[in-house]
Image (tube, rainbow, N blue to C red; front, top):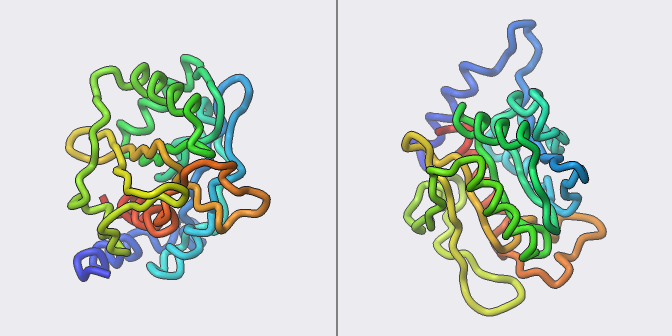
Length: 218
């Protein structure tokens, strides 16, 4: 790990190691529940949370906290995953919370289960509705997210030859959302999930660690 990142994490620990009631400070990460159908994902592995905790010595909870996009509890976590399959439509409250969460410093990773095209189309529509003036841009492989903890020079696809790129939205110069139309769900570390023929990113677990650390540092 780069020395600059170690120093940043050390400062983070010094500031946040203990809460006001003198209990150990814990970092929770959310798995979003959204739309009238209460869509969410059971196939986005939380294994990377424990690995990130081990590498950084931060008090990161090893399991996702299920959070409803329309509830105020959303703002209790710095990092969320937004994933699922099939078409969906967000409520006005969910769109407003999505916009406010990202604008206030929250970080979100969005990726379909099984590389599902219907979910990708719905996500693009809903994120444009929530942030109409913030275009999604392709992230160059020189971006800090590709070297926060693990050096990831390329993103390879599991089930077909070739590589892929991540996309993102920056707000006030800060990367707030990372999106992959291919799976970042790391099904190797889930039970009963096989990506259902979807085209998963081979470096998913490494990238999810990098993205979480980036969210905590920036």
